[in-house]
Each structure stands twice: as structure tokens, then as C-alpha cells.
Image (cartoon, rainbow, N blue to C red; front, side, top):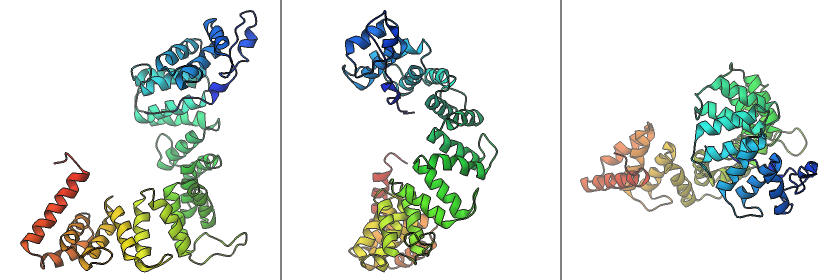
Length: 380
């Protein structure tokens, strides 16, 4: 796993150079003079040891040194300092400054989690979900995520919502899933916003409400969440859940707005958005008709295995529309799509196969082999 160190909490004030005034050792920050922090850490002040560990961890005021970071984290962690226990768990988790050791990571996360450290509770839940360093246990994962979620940890709220949606570790309960996703979504968690939008779109756990679905999709889409951008594009395409300004007047379908959101998703590699964008260019809906652009977007989707895009790209090569006519490439794309059960591609393949020479079929097979080997090297 690859989790994030607790750098924000590392800025809590720590440290002092005067052994006669231990309270001052709690008032220094990692921005304080290094000699003061070091003196307090050497006197055994856990918060100073923790902050010195952070300084070595991120190279703030000292040269970055994972081994030194671990040494100071351990000294603070051994005194029960929860932030240090959490960060030491992360170091073991990622193999930084120590050999990677999931069991040790889980041990330190547990010590911090038992003190109520929300991020440690979240990470321990992940470890139980994956069975890393601890026996796999979805009920234990849900228990730790609930403890973190109740403290407002957005990712824990999101994951707990997933558990309720899927009935894993807890009884299936769409209303509970929606409740936890709403709490995370209100903190700006994009996946929770998207999931809550889905719940409103289909009426699971909440009353069906397309306007609410569009609202949550938009919030996630504006943060760059590709699936939300795609779904929001669908809503603009059919004029569902989207309104003009602040008045409750449904908008008619808006192909240009659909294209805008699909383009944003497609540029992130979303295959269905790439396919839909190609279709819009082919039909001239929301954009000027442009077969070359249609072929470009279908190619991107086809190369990710989208069967309908492969079929359509084959048609364009067959007809020389947007691309140079090439019967071998047409056959290749029909073949890939047909292998996924696309009936139109199978029919098109059968038709052109009867029109191809042996040399053309051999060329199509060669192109297919080269394409597969380039994308799946080493597969037999």
C-alpha cells in the first residue's frame, strides 16, 4: 500500500531547549530553531521527537533522511505519541527507512487507532480489507472505518458507504450507504459525490431526483472526476436533471454541453466518453461534423477494448471515412469487436472476408498479432 504521512498534524507546536521549562517544549514548531527542537527531543519530549522525525522525513531544515525520521518517530511512538505511531506505521507500510513490513505497519497503526487517531483507524481498516499485515476481515475493516467516519474522516465515510452498498462487513443498506456518502460528499470527496449522484439518479437509498443527481455529478465533475463528467454529459444529452439558472424550468437537450463534459472525461481516458464523443463528431451534434475527429476518438476507445468503438472504427476503415480506406485494418477491428460478442462487427467481418484475398487476410492477421503483442507483451 502507499499511504500518506501525517504532515498536517506535524505542524503542531513542539520543542524547547530549556529542560527547566518543559511547557515551552510543547510550544515550538518545526519552523523553530533546529537546535531548540533537537535539544527538546534529546531530553525525551515526545512531541519534539515527532516533529524532528517529520523534519527529516520531508527535508525541512535538515537533509531528508528516512532512517533518521524513523529513529525519531520510534522514540516518540514508544512513549505513546499517536501521531508518531501513525507515521511509523506509514514508514513500515511503504518501506521507507525500514524494510517494508505490513505486520509492523498494522501494529503501529493499531496503537494509534486505539487512541482515536482517525487516519490510523482508516489505514487499519484498509489493511483488514486487503488482508495485509492482519487476517482479511471485512467486518473489522468496517468497524475501524466507522470509528474514523464518526470523527469526520471523509475517506472512511466513503468506504463505509461502499460497505453498506455492497453488504460487505455490514448488512446491505442503501439508505446507510447514502447517509455516509452524503457526509463525505459534503466535505468535497469526489467519489462520494459521484456515488450519491448515482443513488439519486436510480432512487436507491434516497428518493429518485434527477436534479439532485445532476447537482452531485456536477460537484464531482468540476473537480475532474471523469465518471461524473461522463454522467453529467448524458444528462445534458437528454435534458434530464439540468435546469436554466435558478428557475425550475427543465432545459431541453444540450448537445454542446454534453460534448463539453464528455471531452473532459475523454481526455482522461474514459472509454465511454471517447466513444460518445466520436459519435457526436460523426453526427455533427454539438460539434461540427468531422469524420477524422470521430475516428480519432473511436480509435482511443477501441485501443482500450471498447467493442462498439472497434466496430465503428472498422466501418471507417472499410469505407475510407475519416481515415484512408484499408480493408486489412477494417478486418482487424471487426475481428476484435466480434471476439467480444459485437454482432454487427461479426456480420461486417463475414461480409468483407468474402471479398478479401488471402494476402489481405494474412495482412490483417499480422496487424492483429502486432497490435496484441504491443499491448500485451509476454502473453501467450
